[in-house]
View (cartoon, rainbow, N blue to C red):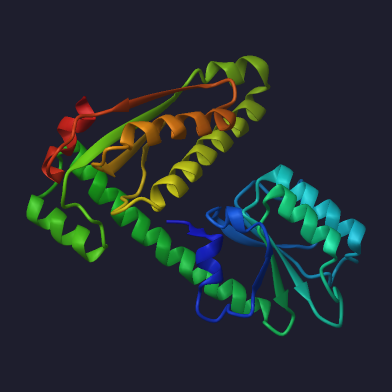
Amino acid sequence: MSLTVEEILALAGLEEMTLRAGARNLHRTVRWPYVAENEGIGEWVMGGELVFVTGINHPRDEANLLRLVHEADASGIAGLVILTGQAFIQRIPDAVIALAERYGLPLIEQPYLLKMVIVTHLIGTALVQMAQTKRSRHDILAQLLSGDYPSLATARQRAAHLKLPLDGPRRLVALRLSAVNVLFDSHAPDEAERLLQHIRQAVQDHLDAWSRVLPNALPVVVQGDLFILLLTEHESVRAELATLYHDLQPIIGNMALFMGLASKVEACSDYPQALNQ
């Protein structure tokens, strides 16, 4: 499981890192940390990075920092960390903070005294641990959805160890991206593929953030272009899904999104039945 910006800020040892803007998007997931050494970052990032700006190898005046915020927003990075101190970047200009807030870009201030080697080690270790946990959780849920598991008792034991709340009634929601041809009809193959992967990741990030705040949330299961949610049963689920569908439209652009809601199931052994619906 990728860490969110909020989870990184909560890591033990990173208490000196301070959020300066973009609090509404702390749910963004971080793929990996990246230290920016060039004048700009647009051509060096792919999206999802937590970008660190030190000012050591390139002057970072207000104009350059504003450029970085513009490029950060356009590139879809998770957040921007600016190191401040007496030697290089003394302070983050108010205009930079205001622009980051307007974009909703998480902007974090890190004192130079907090060594980069410590920060990247803590984040890298946490990312590896979360990735292992995500694989295990996805494995359990995928087995339960397919009905192909060694035993229900073993699946439940693994789920309990990984803090997967399987007990209780659930409603399965399946979302499928379609009309992929729209991208390939209007873009060169390499650009269309890049856009497709970007849209898939953006949809997953939105679903992860949306479901994370729900009671007894389970991770989103991704199978190709199919995104599977396992929601607790409650009266307003249809209205919430209608809002979710509406919110996803700007993300998918000209692509199509189909959503299906299964009947309530009482136990995890019934997940295959819900998926088949």
